[in-house]
Amino acid sequence: MKWFKHHSDFRQTPAMSYIAEELGDMGVAGVYRLYEVFAQRFGANDDFSGTLLLQPPFTERWLAQEILTPRLSDAEIENPYTDVHAVPIEQLNRFLKVCVEAGILKITTETCSASQIQPDGTLKQIGDHTWRRLAIPGFADLKDEWAGRSRLKSKALSTPE
Image (cartoon, rainbow, N blue to C red):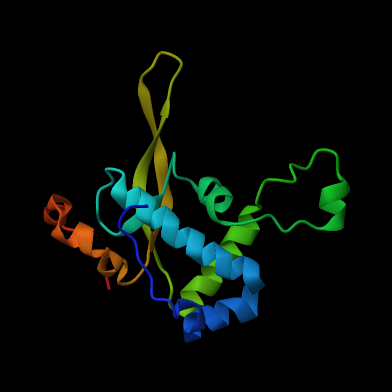
């Protein structure tokens, strides 16, 4: 993470207080990790749009594993077939919902044509698929001074408001 910064009072903002109230310390940690994921993606030759489209290989399951710690019931833990390290998608959905309510995150959807690779290597159109696009409002403004002076500045970092 080379260019991300946050204010030292971020944890005391109304949005973070709301997240702490709804999701506890794990939710607060998840927000910081979400910011780190955004910083890594936009520093690693991404499209510099300030958003993250949850489509393969960056799926909801990938994001859940990156930012959250699993909260499993006793029954799930006792089940020998449960991966105790896997974060349930329902937990990610709850986290994202609370982040939207707090104003930390905006979610839109995009519908794209879906295709499937056939055994002979050709692509077959199988209909449409809808993906979620995540955006942290004002995220591009969080780049540090070095990034602001660097040549990366010309790649038009921006976050939709």
